[in-house]
Length: 173
Ligand SMILES: Cc1cc2nc3c(=O)[nH]c(=O)nc-3n(C[C@H](O)[C@H](O)[C@H](O)COP(=O)(O)O)c2cc1C
Image 1 (spheres, rainbow, N blue to C red):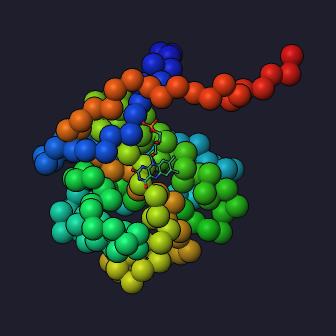
Image 2 (cartoon, rainbow, N blue to C red):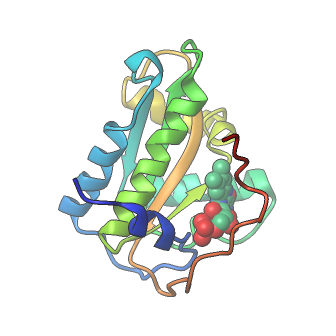
């Protein structure tokens, strides 16, 4: 079993992406990492919508920008948007979805793909446009947007890891 600590420590959020597609095999690996996240009672309450279609990706970007009242692309030009939603009827749904996103961020980094967690998926999937995506995929049930994991090849690689606060860990020995 290899130690993944180096991957965890060197992962950074990428916020500037090259305008080129991501290799589909690499996207599949990132999705698999998400699917193998732990979940409460193994109920696997989360789902992932993988968006590589530019029209849909741009539409989601506009919906989110509009919600935030900004002009810029909240996905930073990333060509791939992985939307994670989870079933509200499962008590651990937010945690389940969050584990999925973190797994995908780490796998992306291990493949030298830039990635970033983007917030406000909940708001996006509460809009008519968001609901339309769910119904077009025949996704039924009480799903809430947990977050977006955007992927692409980095234009700028953030350097170094961010120092951790001093009072992170408390030990009872
Ligand atoms: C729950 C969550 C929501 C986030 N939402 C956004 C976001 O909407 N936009 C963004 O640029 N970064 C977002 N981030 C990324 C954080 O800005 C980033 O993780 C933080 O600054 C630490 O930097 P690092 O990931 O490079 O260690 C989010 C991260 C988390 C965990």
